[in-house]
Image 1: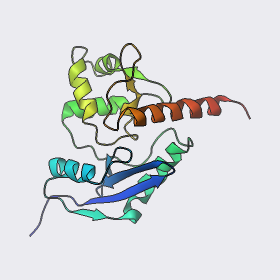
Image 2 (image 1 turned 90 degrees about the vertical axis):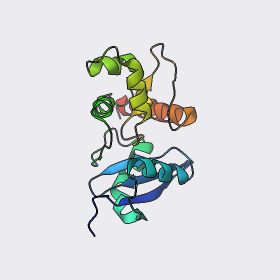
Image 3 (image 1 turned 120 degrees about the vertical axis):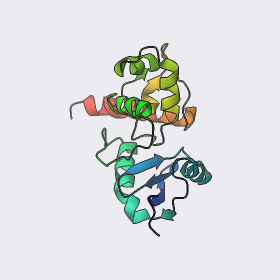
Image 4 (image 1 turned 90 degrees about the horizontal axis):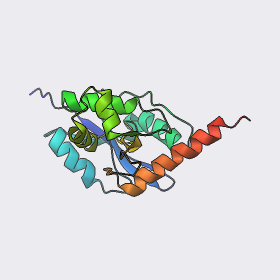
Amino acid sequence: METNKPTLYWSLLMFKDWNFYIASTLKGLVFVGSQNKPIEELFEWARKRFPGSLLVEDDDKLEPYAVEITQYLEGKRKNFTVPVEYAGTQFQLAVWNALCEIPYGQTKSYSDIANDINKPAAVRAVGAAIGANPVLITVPCHRVIGKNGSLTGYRGGFEMKTLLLDLEKRASSEMDVPH
């Protein structure tokens, strides 16, 4: 019996104090989990987004993704080159693509993203789409802050968001210093 349900490959990425699950299909990265959350976060997401798909632990298949994410966490990578397979609505895809345009070390507001996708009145919908982003870090929703500069919700939690923004700020300032 042939099935069109993709197999999801997953691995636990561990780097210093960072532990989170990542998952991909054969086409690309589909999930980057929250810091130090149990595997149930991945399983619950997979049940909703890929119902009936087989989940297979496979560190080798996830290695290219783990390498780039680790390089990012080391402050050695600003952009990701690994493929991402988005599973979302057209609106979500537009928002997620706009997130990928936010430069490393910089932030934008929800209003900025709404304007970027030519939907200036859709600020709340933009927030919902950002909250539905399954690929943390690589689709940098952590770079979105409140219009007044305040930190706002983040699926990975405020601590993870703060750590990611601080990492980028620190790495950006180190990269700007001539050696």
